[in-house]
Image (cartoon, rainbow, N blue to C red; front, side):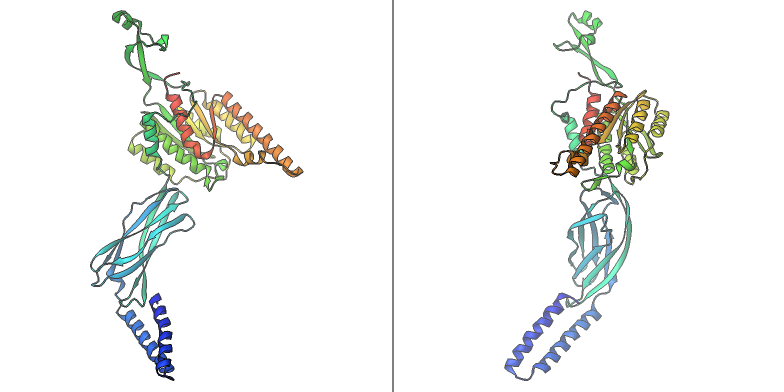
Length: 436
């Protein structure tokens, strides 16, 4: 029953009142006649309404959706009947993992024609999800009844990490403006440089770069010009253990890390280097050897879209020894991880010292915002004073552990989760830069 039936029934009361004024005592007769007519039209509308097979529905979108961003889901609806039909669609999705907005799922489909229906969905979790059916509702000829049916349009959608920032980062890299203000460009241990060309000396050039043979031939100072080594292996290591399962502003640290990992991998490829991937917790679950290009990026995407965190403490030593076994060439290794206890930190420090014997480890940690907030509070009672003192003590201990990582050969970055991408790419550029 549509709203039109309700409106007509309400109109009937006005008709009855008007009839009672014109013909006193005729209210019951008018009531019965009016409602019998309304019921007759309603039943007729049900009987002569088009059959469901006149409506054909097909999904139009790609199977890929992107995490934390808006995605359009579209349907093509064809009406083979000789009359226009007012159709409403409802896709069967998980409300728990998807937020729906800006729906355009109710419209008129012309006779013998078709219309595009759509809605906007924002996934709140990565992984594979099946949308099983589409529920359809359409009106009868008189607009008094609805007919319902469901169509089995089961399709698996894969929710991938958000790639919306890639074009922005590529543009910034092209203009070479990603380095933050005040950050000095310095060469780091482990990066190589290849000879590019000869050029005339200009004030400020390093005297060590003077090419004496070229200088003798040209009778003026000539220097060697170098460019950063190409095809440098850059490994991205993701810890999926318990410490990465905590949420920050609605998203887990692991989600921020995966997004940063994809951006970093893309920039590494843009700069001519090869990116690899290792995922681990108690053991190594994924390992992709360094490469570049669109096929390699797709392989990285397929590996990352369904990765979930675990409740286990990670085995750093085992994972890094595994990496040493498969990666013989000296590489930069970006490690997205965190620790909650001093024991975990000591294990990470020990493992990093093993990795630093052959590679250049860069450890990315998330700032503990909860402790920072407590330590900056204004205490008014003994309990809060105690909590603030404990928070400050834990933060000091964390700073000590970070310094220990740096002393063991790692470059340690402690930053906010939203800055994982910008800070890791910055560090990569610093390591790639050839000038001091």
